Image (cartoon, rainbow, N blue to C red; front, side):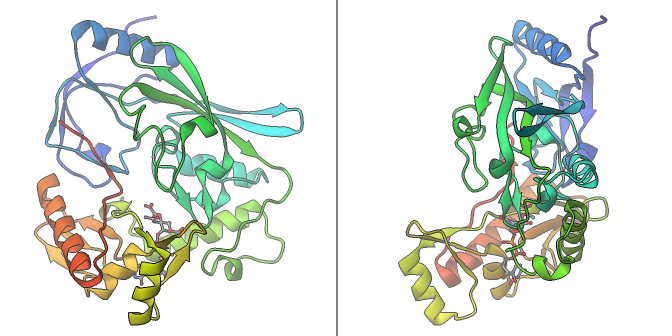
Length: 338
Ligand code: EPU
């Protein structure tokens, strides 16, 4: 098999949904596990630092990435029956939304609440994607990774991934040491209906199919979230913050309408979008960036800006929220270092 092409000086503006300007010194897009191992081998020999990029929908890219950017395009997936379990093996390069719609259209339950989340499957465990009452962690069986140092394949069980809200071991201890190559998801042929979040239940027929749930989720998301194809953005820019139950109760006294999600462990999750909205920041523009006018949690890029400009707006927003509510907001997308 011929060696995988390594391109030079590649423009990544179109490879991140925020459309931030970024040039990769080198770029390779392996389609198979063997090609990925080869490019890792070569990077080690040449001493190139490797940055792994998925669909680019949850990253803040710097102006330049030296070394090599690797985009795993492993795009195969298949179903497996194991005892009474139905599993889906999914390559890291499969588009998440397309997978969700295929599974839902086949009448398989499990991922339908996570429809229309942008990005590749390989990135899904990193931030433990979640929406409408379901997180990837609820459906994940195992993750296959490649050890960057040895090129060997390893498996992590769901528990080993240390999932939390928008968090996993892939943001922590394993951030620089492995590359996710495959997910194994647990699906169900029997209804596995989760309609408790927001008004989802009112938007599906009685006894819905997974496709009907997926379509309802898409409709809700389209009403609130800007399409990155039309207006550059990275979905929620801030994580929903946690405060103690006591602090939430005190805030609630002053702001009786404030949405609160008690976690049952002494912590309450607040809605960052609501906090930003209350500061009157919907539509607030600073340079090339703005707070989205329909969903305050999303920052949008009109073009011509860079990461510095985006972080300046994020800072302004976080400062306003801190002044008013004494709550600290932290960004959700990953800051990729140069
Ligand atoms: N709200 C406002 N104003 C706003 C935005 C929200 O008042 O501008 C209020 C809403 O009315 C609601 C509450 O805040 O009472 C929560 O809003 P919503 O249900 O829209 O969810 P969210 O907290 O804004 C989270 C996820 C989304 C996910 C939705 C649905 C995070 C950071 N975001 O958003 O995920 O789609 O719940 O489950 O957890 C993403 O991660 O990119 C993303 C879009």
